[in-house]
Length: 213
Length: 344
Image 1 (spheres, each protein chain N blue to C red):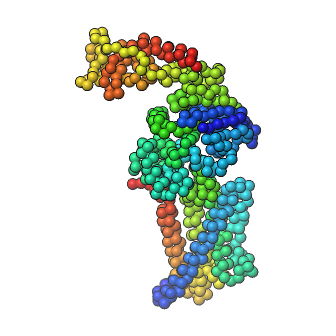
Image 2: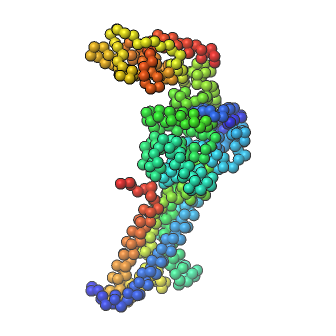
Image 3: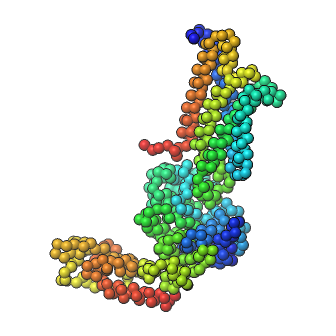
């Protein structure tokens, strides 16, 4: 397997476009996943009986094969980016929802109690006390969901999307390994960079967890 | 200032936490609620800021029925200190203290300035303000908890076993600090503890609760120790309640005379006439000089420890003013008891 460097040189624009598109799909899914999870996790956390139900649903959704999900969505949103993002979002929920609920659980009862006793109303407590304290656990889920989404985007090649995944079909059809290798390397690179960026974001957002020198 | 009128609290599981409580807590005074666990003392405290709602009866703070006020606004107007401080781990010490002023909409700058002021009030350095709670010792955290409760200058302070989780030495320091603060601020304080010594030390009035949420006796510490209402209270106060009473009386009235010359033990002074130790030949025993505002209990204790039965009395600067004998101390201790029992 040799790499045709001239092909790479000729296709830098395409590779860049595909990388950006790939990242966009994955990050949109994580973003929507986080928003949906935050809302559902608050419900699951406050109303105990709903907890098992919601977590169960997110598990069941996760077991649907990825290609099947895109096919099932076709009548709704067609061969579009929307279909890709919806599909990926569904998969992020299994980690994001569970971690967000666990994150909220990890907030010490004493702290929640103190917020209430100081006269903090429930919404403000949620936004300024519970979410920040749940952040480390939530972020652990976000990191997994991000890496998972970046690797899953390629599957959407079947519906004409798929970002860097298009390089795999291209290389496979022409029996030409260079695009495949480029696609794999770029996907891994994206995942590593995204993960590092999230670690940095978490560092900035949780100053209280830094150890002092 | 705080009035309980026929207050009843039954929890959904059927247990009665507070039974028909009628109690007035005076403005500017420290009311300590004591009793063993499950006696309803904490529930009583928590009903004041509506962390628990009464089943029946009314609670008024400053004449206003608490259940007719917005719960969050009521809580902002009442300081609250809990065990292990309950600080927000993700906020700096300064921002923790600024919590209530911020909720009241005082703005970040003004709230932080107020918080910085309070750091000093509770005896913490300005540098501590930049730290996070987990970087402080338990005692320091507890001080921050007190500062946070004081931030909006509330007239009422609720303290739920605030010093329960720190070691005895730090606890004594925190108690001293609270006494000093209270002399300055004259808040209406409701203090929950299961430690009767803490109650005697801090309380202007002590309310003793029995399991089932019954208030057994509410009285000033001296009265309580001199005349417990029944065997339950007497047992709760413990066998040494006579000595505890002495901890509330000062040494001031005990007569003193010049240090005796001769005898096997001599009191050695330094150049400034401050007592150093007792000496007999080569042997030395430590001396703990006492001031007029020290308690009769510590005087009794020191007179037993002293090789001559004499205690060294000093002025505010530590200069010897005279000595008092074991007999005189004992006599005054007995007299203090009789007086308290007759007066009560």
